[in-house]
Length: 279
Image (cartoon, rainbow, N blue to C red; front, side):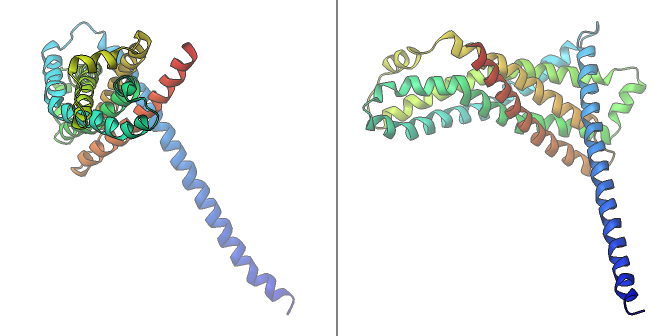
């Protein structure tokens, strides 16, 4: 009987370890299935949005209103962001170029950096925080207050009126906001150079745009359309599929910012790889 006792004591330990392992496996399986379900729902949402975009009855009035809300009302924030980008990039790069005696290359380096990469990505991330959270919170509050359900009852297509107009407005406005931020960034760079020197704007412009080529400009503009589409789709999806509770509005806005920012970085990585292969 003394030899059997240790075996009897080990059996509950093995049983509890097996139960814990099975519980962890089930939990991971549920999380994986919910993630895949979320991805599938998002893809279906994109396909439905794409289908409603080419429908006959397009909401032009709501589209122009969203262009005003997304584009014009974002100009102050984008102006400050663009100017700070040019200032910081110039101030940080100047000492290194002074060491190598290449200060004359500073305007062109800043312009190329802003137009090709820094301007589009930073502006898209700022817009993901402002526009993405705004769309998510707006549609989420409409979901909570059952305004979207009221639209469906009154024979108004909420996808066409709410989602398509916002996605298209974001897709078209973001490239313009990026160009606007690039202009302010170049102006901020000129101001930073004149802090420790005296360079006319005409000379600065000739140095800044002297090394720019069309191939530097085209990929940066093309990928901003995808940035805008990603921000609009993610914000609309999170708001449109929000829960019924009031806390779901904050969750929709927060998750829209996080997911849109992540997808913007992923899209930028893919765009850089494609551009590198084509050039």
